[in-house]
Amino acid sequence: MSVSDLPAINASLNGLATVLLLVGYGLIRRRHRSAHKWIMISAFGVSVVFLTCYVVYHLNTQVITAFTGVGIVRIIYFTMLVSHIALAATVPPLCLVTLYRAWRGQFDKHRRIARITFPIWLYVSVTGVLIYVVLYHLYPTSGND
Image 1 (cartoon, rainbow, N blue to C red):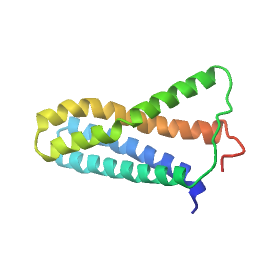
Image 2: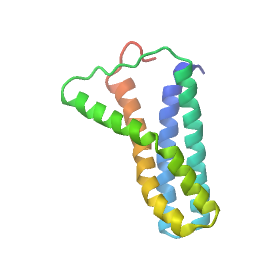
Image 3: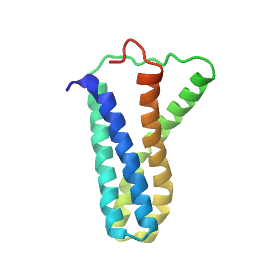
Image 4: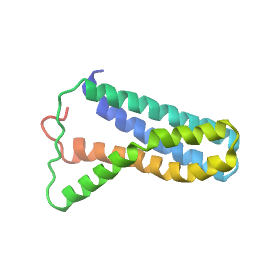
């Protein structure tokens, strides 16, 4: 394994986080609180591993991944990318507050913030996978390993 493998690993981690988030949501809707708790802790752990790999990749590579699409697909891609980046910056603090409130047993406050955290976290996870697919599979450049 090398640093050039990290984009695929990151996409896989984002995909796994997406699945865990959806399972966690389903569990809490069915009032399976204990299972929900462990799935959401797992989703957070996967996201921490993703963020670590993401930082390692960007600190250790000089590869510029340029988007080569043209026309409307370019507009769609950059709209998705900008929204992904902007919302990704909010996920760590939102997750920490959401988890903290659950840990403290402040479930009314936990539910209120989780209603904000969940869709943002889910969107960021899904768009992370989509961005990878677009850059590395649909519109690859010679710089993409």
